Length: 462
Ligand code: ARG
Image (cartoon, rainbow, N blue to C red; front, top):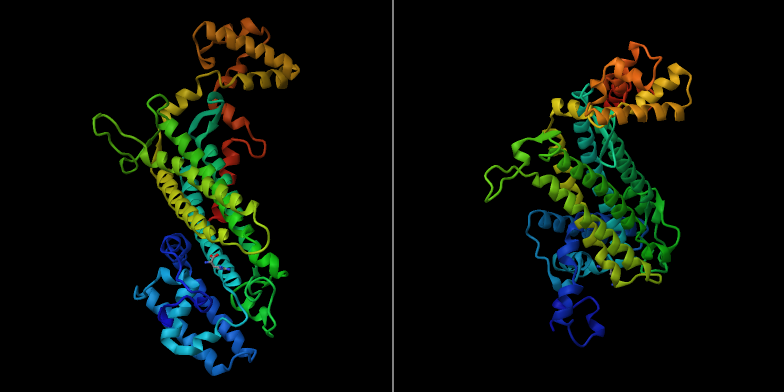
């Protein structure tokens, strides 16, 4: 084999790697996505080696020049990635040799691919978490806009998918804002965790060169170097954090999708989507199907799967580095791609949905949704315990059910059959708007609360 084409470890090997293994052993098709981070890490490492006089300044500059050239080549699609050189790190190193010659051999002083790959990966996850956060912000803004237009839209709130109590549609939308706010916080916190720089721990033991890890940390935007070289090359918690946060966010997206699908159904008819968020049927001419919502619901499982795979990979690994961990990048990249698409589709869905306000209001009156308000009225006005009020209200529901009437269709005489000493002011209790507006406790669905919350959130998400 010509030495030019040999693996960096070729000197000890009599045979090239099995082609069958190379197919799965080479990660270049996946990890070439780390090229920006890899080159940045190498540039900073070369600067540090020069600064510390571990290599001379001229050589350091030459290496950096070559690396920048490679970055340009990759950006312009002029770089030939090769499975023969396994991964992004060795592909770049090999190319550096062809560009600057034997000086390239000095770059790998005081580092290993083990610390290199985690440095790249942490930087990538940080960058990508910021992307996710941006998109979550966009989604939250769409929820807020929709909420603002629906402060007075009344609908039934559900528990067990049974009509429970009247709520404002805006309040429901704001519930999702809270969920996605927590998702955002999770990614923000993850970024705070990824503040220790792995570069310089070498294969697992550290190095005998007088390197300056504080310098590389700072230059790469980390707060400080990692404390323990063994932990550093073994640790993939940051990937797990990302995958777990992505999974929880996917849970929220999936619940949203599921709910919108139900509401869009011909049975519920609570909302409609814009035609651009629907597809037709090849056989049934009347159909308009909510495929985008269904797809993002379906894809959430992939996010969970990537997390499960990563947890399983890590649970049996002794310290420190094992090739098993190479698969971490595919899992995280895939999860990121799926999540980003799902967030964007969710955003489109929220923007495009139109509430069927009449239907919402009429459904809010079905299912005796103001029965709790009646019990509360009796407690607050008739000096009863809640349990006493509850029983009287349950009797009224039994009566209405028998008469096939909604609670707001009963007249005062009928209500007095259940509880004698009531005056006509009780009638307002069965008005769903009144019901909503009585829920003034912090976090409740009253119009006043919602208005306040929307203006607070709008300031937060400008
Ligand atoms: N491509 C490898 C990975 O992602 C880089 C680290 C290789 N280290 C090793 N000791 N083989 O895990």
